[in-house]
Image (cartoon, rainbow, N blue to C red; front, side, top):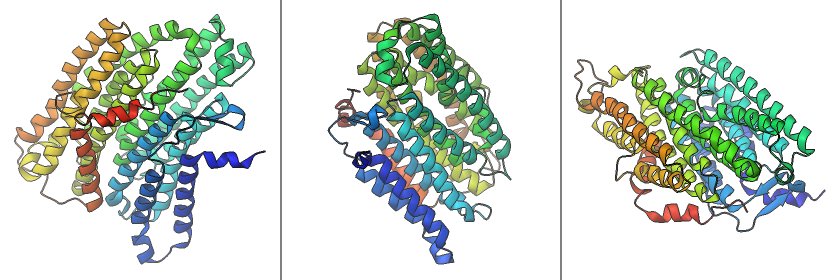
Length: 476
């Protein structure tokens, strides 16, 4: 075996190095001063990991007999996921200083980075077994993270719901993969593509596979776990679930659809057509009814997943660039929102209802402004980055011939603007005799909010960001 192949897996190797260092530090650093440096060390190591992989390797690679694949665009997506993870870890600082979590920091870092490593393997999979191993590596530690805050906020219940849903979805997906192997005799992506003929068993395999991955993306009707898990999980974990996990799953789905099921494009386009309509419509209608903000943004994330699928349904490689750009903008905006929710929850011992945010502008005008900018970006209001990301996705689907679908998506964008403005109305207009008291957030949270807000404001205006992603927009 040629072990030098491992050296070509630069993102995975650097991430594993970060995990090992943090694990050993947690094991041997016992003094109070050493524990104080734990979080800064984690952030510094993640910054080094991010910087080491910021510039993709130019050459495409196929390692371990084709089970692991690398193209530059995959490195771009991994960089975006690493940046999102860094922001989540930074925002987790005050939560990890709490009495019941202070001595579980090591577990939080290792579990979070384990899920990220699993997503890396999902993205670079060239074989269904590699993909499944990556999926499970991303899912099982995620269930532990959801149940991390087990003595508060129904976290243990949320963890049980997540692991049960993940178990059933994985079983369904593996059943579909067994059909693929039974009809083609191989699990290598390239070989499966050449053997697919669209038989009824292969169509069933496609449906089962999509159902399993649809759970990870929270597409209707595979979304029923989302609101309960988002509400019960620690807010920092909810942020991680809503952006990092979803981005990896959508990109992987598009990669497999274009690479493996290329012979069945009309079939999965018809399936996605109705799934997208159901996802954005049902999610928007249910979001209007929510008073708990974590459930509110759970349905918002379901709706955003539907918009992301507009890039997938195009069935063309040129849909990759707007999809990745949309995921980047969505990551920045959502991390601003969940960062503010987390810091207010910490300061107020659990205020997460919409009415709790009435009059927030009077006491915390800066946080209110940042949250407003992020909400406007999610709603797609110009000149924020969310407008440009939605425009590019809509244009991609429109050019692919899905004009009615784009029209329905535009109508749902107007509906989403209404319920996002409900939050803005509460913060600026609704009176509150006991608003959230003025406070100053920690420096890690402030820095992460500044960086994410800068992305919301500039990603749409600075065209080089979109051009940088577009320069790697191929799987070949």
